[in-house]
Amino acid sequence: MSELFVVGIGPGGREDMTLRADRVLSCCDIIVGYRLYVDLVRESYPQKEYIVSDMMREKERCKAALELAAAGKRVALICSGDSGVYGMASLVYELRGLSEKPEIEIVPGVTAALAGGALLGAPLGHDFAVISLSDRLTEWAAIEKRLVCAALSDMVIVLYNPASHARPDCLKRACGVLMRHIPEGRPCAVARNISRRGEKTELLTLGELSSAPADMFCTVFIGSSTTKIINNKLVTPRGYHDV
Image 1 (cartoon, rainbow, N blue to C red):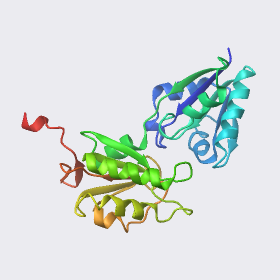
Image 2 (image 1 turned 90 degrees about the vertical axis):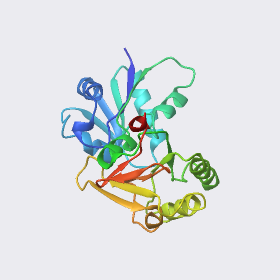
Image 3 (image 1 turned 180 degrees about the horizontal axis):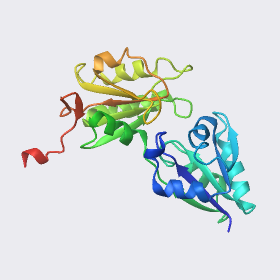
Image 4 (image 1 turned 45 degrees about the vertical axis):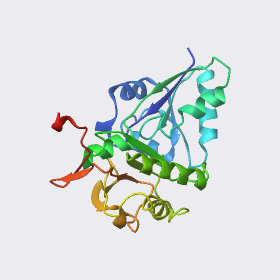
């Protein structure tokens, strides 16, 4: 049977990979992925054949995975975090189009918002929004509109891809947008290298966040009006305590 598994491998550490993801990677013939993500799993699955490519080769990776699966191989296309959250799942379906072959199975994983939230305490105890600050595929005007809407909704906001070498000021720009609607003293946090070497968290205010260093290995949390810091942990109450 020709089958392509699109696998979320979690934030990086093997302990945060799901049992289902591990089973699929153990049983597949070929693992396809971005170089950094392959490096995260290669030691655990040393006997596998790997197809590796660099950033901005997403379409090529997905096409190669589909072709290999159609040829009868059991293929795993790996994604960091969850395969459907800024991952390759949607592109795989787009590229396969109306065809029914190869069969596609999406394997979910622990996305950075959840893994980072666990490190920080319980910032996602109530409603929250996830927004990517990368303008490589989304125009900044659309990102800014989403930031404004999320701020006005008074939800916790989680920012993915806050900055890179090509986009060094995206987080600062985003904070500028948010501070039009959110007080500068709002509790915020940054989780860096989640579940990987160099893992680190930092609590700070929205005003401090605007000048904080960030890169693609950071996930940023901006609290709602009910978010508080309890014993150095970021907590957003659901309301159970007051019932």
